[in-house]
Image 1 (spheres, protein in one colour):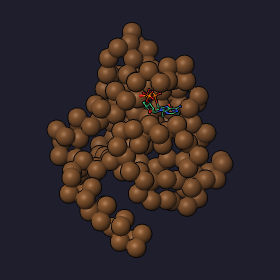
Image 2: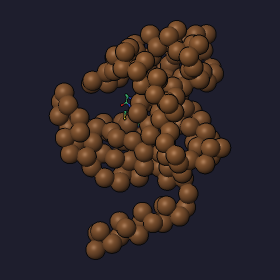
Image 3: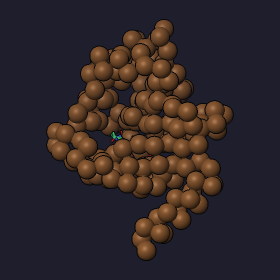
Length: 165
Ligand SMILES: CC(C)(COP(=O)(O)OP(=O)(O)OC[C@H]1O[C@@H](n2cnc3c(N)ncnc32)[C@H](O)[C@@H]1OP(=O)(O)O)[C@@H](O)C(=O)NCCC(=O)NCCS
């Protein structure tokens, strides 16, 4: 098994494999053109985990200054609970540490308990709610953040305690 970093050379040969997992994993899957348009934007990255040209797990993220925004992470349903998405998460963490990125942010459907448990296992905190963010079906998004420097964790704790009175 290996980490495959997509670039302009190999993007098209891997996107078909990614879309198969995408269709099995998301209520409103992205199309091929949505992926291509996203990858034309600067600071967009797709990483896959697999072997022999086969993809089992992938993630899509963008970096903006000192933040990484995770747009997608999914594992083929038959390959779940084998630590594959965790490997991608650890690779993203190591990328953040080498590139002075201080936090990872994401949105997740409120009902997506598996993903929320996955993110919490990796240290993400519940930082907010975005009302009606998702469609088909309409649903709120839970906003989650992994703070990578201790000062931000302490600040978040302090603000949360003030809000909770
Ligand atoms: C969330 C997802 C990416 C996890 O992928 P995965 O490769 O199965 O994850 P891992 O095997 O690395 O799981 C690591 C940990 O996450 C948690 N976890 C993952 N799936 C879980 C489940 N179904 N139930 C409970 N905990 C779960 C567990 O803590 C697990 O550790 P454990 O197996 O030692 O208990 C996968 O379930 C998926 O593709 N879901 C559909 C797409 C999706 O919802 N993506 C997130 C959108 S924001």
